[in-house]
Length: 260
Ligand SMILES: Nc1ncnc2c1ncn2[C@@H]1O[C@H](COP(=O)(O)OP(=O)(O)OP(=O)(O)O)[C@@H](O)[C@H]1O
Image 1 (cartoon, rainbow, N blue to C red):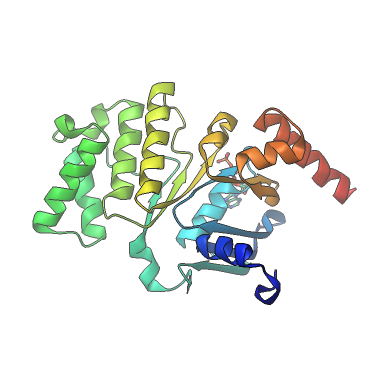
Image 2 (cartoon, rainbow, N blue to C red; image 1 turned 60 degrees about the horizontal axis):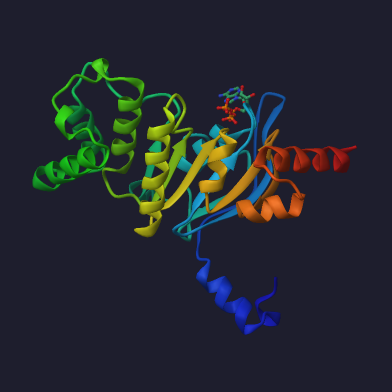
């Protein structure tokens, strides 16, 4: 919308919605497979933005492009006003991969030290942050345990602690609750809300549609295309459906109609 024609209320709303990430016409193809297709979306500062979509809809590829691990074929990514390729961005981002990136023959403490070293946290600051994060994910009493002895949930908690140890402003979490029991899932989502309160922006992928309601806004993805992006309640209202699963199917069928 043109800023010249906006009302005072619209201006207030626009300024309150500071963009953290702006994705414009992003595209990625592997061979003949178009995995991310002309994707345009904005993620606002301090929100939890959920990437919702079935297996193979391009969520991981999108996250990898945001982190800078996969190069887009087309389009652009702007993070905090800087191009994604700007070296200053890396230190402000935390990334939790879908499969564990932990060293199973090292202790929890040593794994965290490894991540701290990558981010340049040293000495007293490093010790304090490791302790603080292990406390927050309830693993402080297991700091000296070898990670190979941990349960799946403990590994997920440690992975989250590693992704957050350097106090990133933008956190990308690729299916962080896969294989996590309902109680721990709830505590993860409570923690995400707390991080939002602290001003941290979260982009999280999931195909647990029940988790969608805990996101500030959602991007519904299918075959690498954006079906819709909005607040969960708005998507339910626009689709006239009672559940996010039905809403997803509604937007997917509309996409099929447009393509037919
Ligand atoms: N490096 C690659 N080379 C070839 N194909 C790839 C590569 N990475 C991803 N793909 C393909 O791209 C498609 C999208 O994969 P992606 O992992 O981004 O989806 P996803 O939505 O994260 O899926 P899931 O929920 O299963 O993790 C899949 O068909 C996948 O096989």
